[in-house]
Length: 137
Image (cartoon, rainbow, N blue to C red; front, side):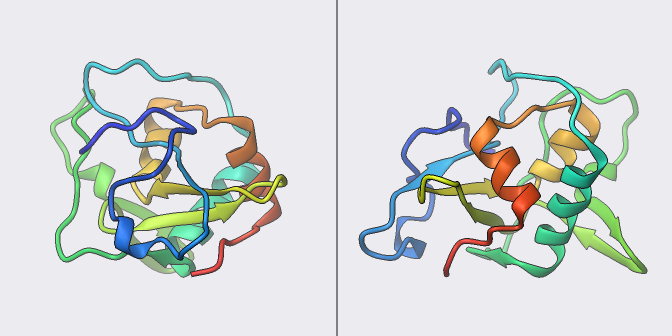
């Protein structure tokens, strides 16, 4: 996947950004790039999975995979369970609005990064996901 540092200006799919919107990157991780780790609360992860299930944008025809090391050779990073649904990750984005009004864009693969690699997103993203403040499309 393409790496972008957290809270830098978004440039992956610029045609999907409405005019006048400040959109920042969150969770665009890549092998060889360090990222913050730490625990997140269950409410955050539940909300993040809900956003990946019901509020995606910038959907693409292909998907990105996780290139970070895993303990097993498996495709578990591509999925998340949401109720009775199996979600596939890595083909779209989650966009939320921070408390200060800036919009934040994360690949849906951020669910895997948080759940399986202990990625700790920046505080504005944590707060926006907990608040379920979905950005306008």
